[in-house]
Image (tube, rainbow, N blue to C red; front, top):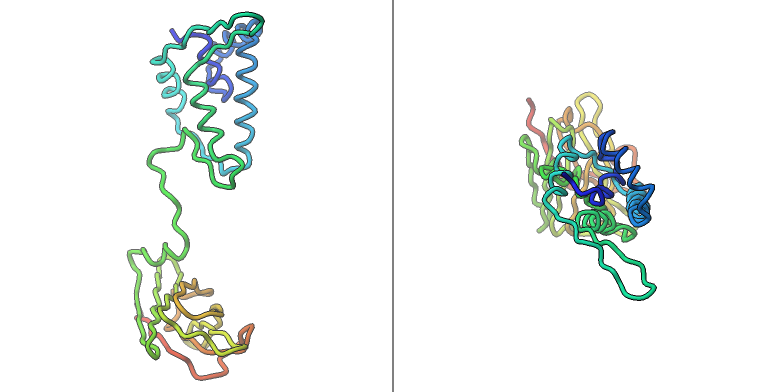
Length: 236
């Protein structure tokens, strides 16, 4: 049988069934220490509203109660004099520490009940670069290199540059997608040279190619100068 004091953590996160909740609430009415502990744990849990919530797995309750059952709560530590006694319990304090970790630091909290199989979400650029159907088209440009990567399944494309010279003062590089029957359609701006990874706008899955031109700051509705380079896409 689980020691009644050890249920404070599970009660604070509403992980008890109806019978256990009723039993603990009767105990709570008589135990000031458990009331204080539950209040502290609930205050900590409320801070998680500022972070990205993760739905707990169905097995959460069974795992929590199974872990509690293996931990023997320490007996009350009685201080001498007028000091009040304090009961230290391992499971609730460990839960509180996990909940508090990184709160207020601007980072995402990893909840203790997060699914072990969860993976970090890839950025849109990384999704294209790692796509199974990624097509790569590389061009040399005066000692630099530009690679256009397209994923038709994601309908996204990324321009990757290496050692790209900066555009002239007051100018930008403008990216284009070439569509049959329409021509060049604006697909984004690149204000700097060097090493860049730019996610193109528009509909690259149906485009027949892409290009880069030098345009006035702010870009143009259609190319005003000959292209710096062009990429011809393979057609399905």
